[in-house]
Length: 390
Image: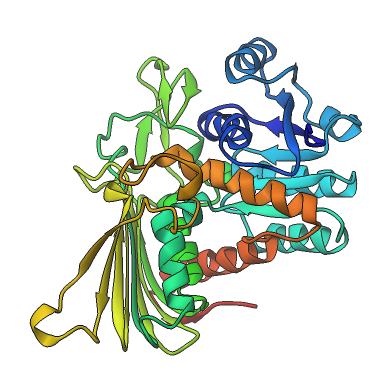
């Protein structure tokens, strides 16, 4: 029998809109979902570009007013894929209109906005409100989380989270919204650092309690682009330049709620590193290590192995017993970046059908926002140790 329909309205159709559209279309083809996602309408600022995106990405209609989604009876869930400065307004309005919400990360541009979003979610307990930290749903990361929860590495002593990119290394790369604090909230810290903050907290099951941080902006002026597209601008504006108002790189130390120490780095200036997400967790009984540039592999060290056989074991996470992988290809056939978004849709749709609240919730997103805020406050105060609020 055909599953009941779940009408989806998406706001934004650039990089994340593309990834989310692919996921909404793919999930029901590989997973037995209790609800059938219907790509009902996509909203964008430009009518012509939004209509073209709707046709290309498989949406049945388009609009230039995201508020239209709130009034439509055929939209059950609003998927927010816009810059951070719009998240709070759209999410709160959608929840108040009785819609489920999926919101891209980071949850907001400030703690106050994130707190307002959490309050709106708490006031609408029948709606699902989920933040899109998609890397949680890479099978190797999900396996790491399972192993820690099972006690396989014992008590966590150390955690390291690095997110390294290089797409801003060229000073001639033009300005985009990601370099505007009013729109993005922060630079590498919130754009990519938020991911490894969430991953460390997710894998360990612990929270960061305080930070000592430094931020740096290496290129303070960049060319002004005539139009923006994707991750960088296109065209030029006659040689004009404008200020970069966010950080280019962030480094900070932290402490976990269980007493362990944690170290983080996020930069978009690491030449040769296109999208390197590296997480390592060291415990009293073993260690785990992950690198997104080899995303189907989890390195596992078991301190109980015989002395002559000790070393990191390379686990290729494609077995049917591994998280999510049983619905995909035969053993040994790896997955890619887009699959984590598909798994996100699967978990979200199952939660909507069951009336449960899938992680990461808006409250989880608020916790990450508080860490980001503490990092910025510490960096502005000569790296002084700064407790994480909340």
